[in-house]
Image (cartoon, rainbow, N blue to C red; front, side, top):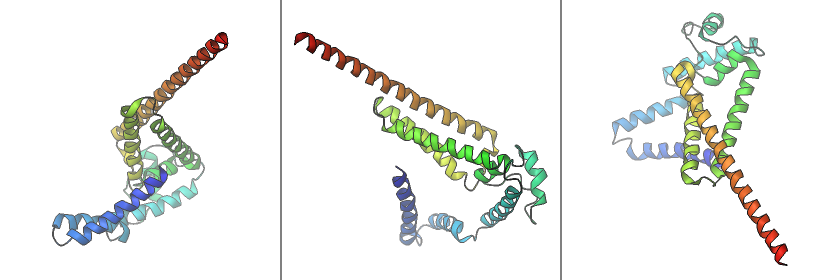
Length: 211
């Protein structure tokens, strides 16, 4: 599955390049879309440059508070970050990156703990999708939960998605519901295996009596 994700990401990039070559001269809106996407890599967009400045100073802040972080909440960031900020970034309220935000607030142990949670979540989802005891509908729901959380985490690379408390709540609700569904699948699988074991033991006992 990991290889499929990597190949899928590369395929999307190749598809966008093919669209540029095919339709750039025909559809103005597509040209605008492509230019916006390409600016992410050429650093020509002002918002990208702004983020890079913030990330650079955030890394310095993290380096000075790597063990404990600066503390949780926007007020802590507003108090500490101006000491590192350069012109034009003094008034920012977050790091524009979920991972840098977690790292800066909670320190190295916080970001490691979050990485472990994310890894275990993905692992559980893959196991749940592989388990066929509950049928296609259940597996599709797990896949949908995994896709939504993964998309949020990908977006979190360049934005602090938990700045909005409603997004923060929905994110963890989706994680909880998806994990709950994988546990239901595991429980059903255990029941099916136990039923098969009891049935096999009964058949074995009947065969011994007959013999």
